Amino acid sequence: MASTETTTASKAVGPAAVTDSGPGQDLAGLEAGLDALETVQTVRTPLRQTLVRKVLPPLTAVVLVLVAWQALVSFKIVTDPSKLPPPSAVWDEVSSAWLQGTLLDYIWTSVSRGLLGFLLALAIGTPLGLVVARVRFIRSAIGPILSGLQSLPSVAWVPPAVIWLGLDNKMMYAVILLGAVPSIANGLVSGVDQVPPLFLRAGRTLGATGLRHTWHIVLPAALPGYLAGLKQGWAFSWRSLMAAEIIASSPDLGVGLGQLLENGRNASSMSMVFLAIFLILIVGIAIDLLIFSPLERRVLRGRGLLVRS
Image 1 (spheres, helix red, strand yellow):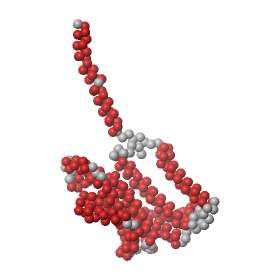
Image 2 (cartoon, helix red, strand yellow; image 1 turned 90 degrees about the vertical axis):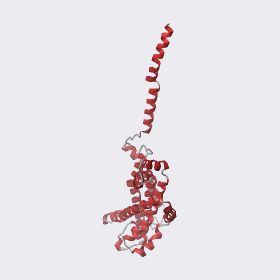
Image 3 (cartoon, rainbow, N blue to C red; image 1 turned 90 degrees about the horizontal axis):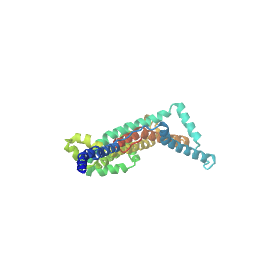
């Protein structure tokens, strides 16, 4: 009798116990674990750690280059200062340009041209890339031409641009466009090609067609490849501009960094040549760090590919 009551009691209590402490709690724990995996934890990196990880390595590399450079001069490994001036001579050139008020003018002349030309290339290359990526006939006709133009050295466009447009800023912008538009368009085409077909079908199912489909589905999904094309397009813009400034010189054009480099060559001043090279390098690094790197981090973080910056 007692055993029968015990068995009955256990049958009555058993399901409740399973519900309270068995599969129900396990399922809740599993859901909490999945939510924790999907949650991107953004922890602010301490300033000291940021300096050590991101600022110290490039500064160390610059110091090592300067030490090696000074060693080549001090130990007479390179004895001709016209071929390799000491770092102090280049610094004197920087100080002289700063005191004369021309240093910032050199930089601004080239940076303003480069950014404006890049924005024009962006306005042309983006719709061109979309059309090439979405229309099969146009892709078959123009796709190989864009690839060929991308591989063509930008300096090859300077002589015809001078003949067609003369020695003015229009020639500079034409060279930039011819160098940057193919890279931006091809980057967008590559990004569109990598969009999963499921995204496109889901967008059409939800009613996104035409421009809405392009704006809300295609472009966001193709953003990583498009951003890579933008970075390459800026590199082509900057190099195209430097080639144009080196070859084409005129008082009406002003003195940019490329013209400064050519002036140093004409004057046989290696310190001026090194000054121009360093300024060109610094501008390229600054544009990448201030514009493209934050954009890239934001895109990757939005897709859960970058947890900590």
